[in-house]
Image (cartoon, rainbow, N blue to C red; front, side):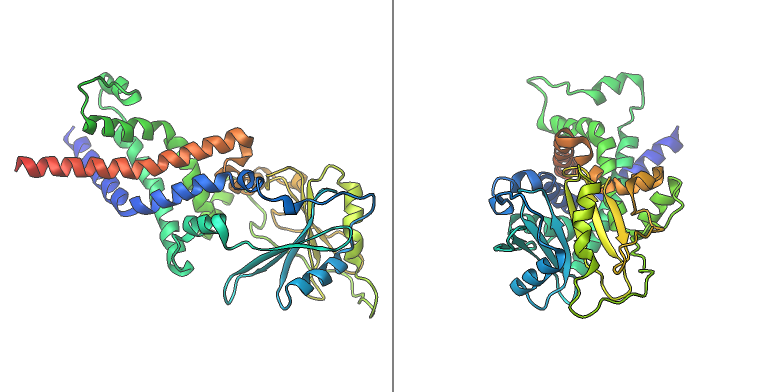
Length: 380
């Protein structure tokens, strides 16, 4: 009995120290996560520039789009070109991680090539929110590490909290499962119940958010999660090489100009196509096929020889979704699970509420610690 009591005290001490150490970080990450969940829904209120009047003609070829976009933003690297529905503008994404982040988009009319708008994706409200969520608005080398390890410790905090929550006898079960308040209940008791009862009900979903966050934060965590679920492929993103030795003659249009029209006939229900230009003379052309609105896990990643358009298979988990095994699907679903999108709007609401309650746990926990410390001090 004494051994159990000492073990419980040790767990409580660990829970308290880790909670006080990471409390502010967990609060910021959780609150910013609440906003990020509904990013697409909020942006839909002011994104009229993303739509055009549809015409009964094909979109401009990818090489023409590349030339027009580079006129709008010269001397920068194009990450990809997103072809949406007939009433949507083409988005050309420019991305460079070094020497400093450059993340802009150019929107063009897909039929005429007319310039519509240029945006800086690293600024604005959601740029601010993302920086807070990923690195606490600190330099990336410092802030991202603090966030990553705090989320990892939050996993331990939630598990230790569940152990501490477990009642010592059956009489306390009711008290741990519901708020038993009356007019005489003091705020300290209410705060304790808010921390323990609410913490218990959201702990399982909180563990999911923290776990999926760790998968994105740590390569070793990502690898272990994949292998633990039976994965046997390469868990990283691999772009295969082209197999042909044919070179494009001067003045000849690149073969990838034919890709989007061809894929539009094959993937008739696709929501969007994102074409990535080949990085050099030997790499393949990558096209990401979005099969569902607002979801990423069931995308098809297609690779084509840049000269012959021969489709080339990849050894990575990021290939055609129909070829994905259970472990591949688990990893590919990670981001959609993290933001609740896997469950549609209901899933996003749940993710929002769980994240909001997770933000409240450090607050009620610090008040609980302060109340007990103050009480002990006043007794002395």
